Length: 430
Image 1 (tube, rainbow, N blue to C red):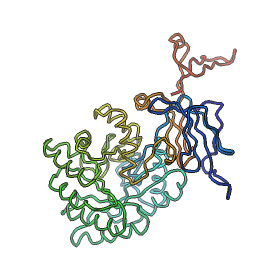
Image 2 (image 1 turned 60 degrees about the horizontal axis):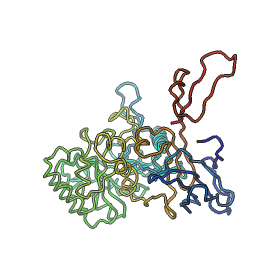
Image 3 (image 1 turned 30 degrees about the vertical axis):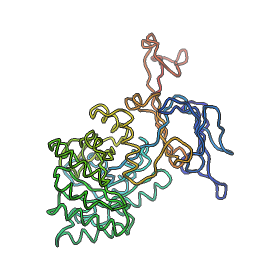
Image 4 (image 1 turned 90 degrees about the vertical axis):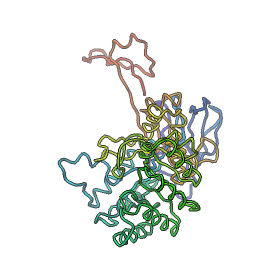
């Protein structure tokens, strides 16, 4: 951020009791359509958007100069595993520790990392079985409360078995998980002896409590997908499945018919371009273009974040969009939409546009055009509920010989005379 910008209140600061909502002016921001504008935020909404230089902060509000930044609706993370994040760094074959403090630490660290990338809301799938009961979910809920005001951590309760006598405990746990605060119910029908019965049990709990459904599946059984679509019809809380890599291994005609059934009943799909997750049966990415052409809402998630399923997972929504462009053939606007607008939609979150009246959930990235931002998105400013909650700044320096190339730069710094050592060359902010 330019050095002369006025700093907004640090995370945690807000209006004093009775002082009214806070205000923040984002000035000289470039939008994806090429316009340069001022954006005034009041409270947790966008209050006004005007031509650059036309707006002033409301009251004693702060100002952030976004010259050189592209301002976008903030992305969201529709598929994370915060309870196992960073566990790949553990030495040896020891199982992932699930004691309370460790789960809470991992979930908090994962949410903050992805917030720094720009995701102001994160849906975290948490296992509630395998002998652990609701302990891990309780810890993720504690992390959710500690992060209030910084970002939204939205836990999904994920049982393993739900059918037959063996599934009775899972069904009871799932209901209890919603009562404890899980914001959605999930499941792993591919691991249940009766996948359709598993999905039916999850949808029954969702209907009872009025919460969304988010199921792990490879999506390689068209008959099961058709039955799921039929069961999902009329459930007003929303049904999402993913990562659905197996759908891409079906014959195109078969996959196309399955996609049409999903689209007809509003079932959304979350793909994982950055790799799989621990509950996915294989690698690969869902057939995004086929699904989109059938009318399915397709969101892009991150999946594993440096756990056993993907020890190098980054949890970066802009990287997910980059991969959808470079490998999936989507246009940059479509790809970013999968990580932002579509992700928010499958999570049941309000739509965000850089327009008056919409939620102040925004991401500013240094760059001029969306394609360039998806290519090199280093410096970022994240706005949640109308205030800056995270900043990442990247500065690349070159040695003196690079100066002859006349590189674009914002500043040029050199050591004082006589200080010794190599002299710093051009400085490029990324």
